[in-house]
Image (tube, rainbow, N blue to C red; front, top):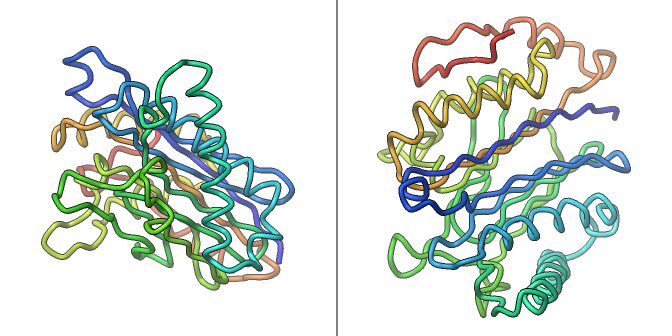
Length: 278
């Protein structure tokens, strides 16, 4: 099966970090190599001084590693996948901690990622935030947030028992059109707290990526604008999003082109966010 993937991701400094003049601790990465596309997202722990560095290292490592090793990983047991990825991340974090002469715990961050190749996907999640996926006109949840004993506590790549909280998901794509990764800051605006289901805004945002008239740059500008003007009003936390769309050739899925042609790019409110301009 021939697929084409597009990605768009942003991270935006939250009001609490703006007020305290501290950096945004969220990070996103996307990479395509060897016919594999990966998106990753990490939310650095607010209590740790260099967690944005940990988030950057973790997201880049998992993107690189999946692009180089997807074929081997997809056939492995979940516990093996989580072990080799976590060991690789921690090894890189330890090297950086030695360079900066700080403890590795200062790099604490969550981790969310999805990689796709042909008709398969491989995803992983440590901590809070959420992984969603898209089918026709519908957003569904793949992986929910995991918090600690208290709602403001979660698990990180540097947590002592992180492996016990590293969730792996892999399957055939079937009718999946794409994925969304969100930090807990963005979660506040994109998940209905009463039903614990994704709001319509998720699909509206995703439809921008499906529309090939929208460049990656324009989509990311629109995402950033919506976060700065809307999401930040609901949280003091940093906010980040990373999206991946999967397009299948017309010959292999004849309805796809017709489906895309039905997508409207007119949005007027938060539940239908401001789309890319041109």
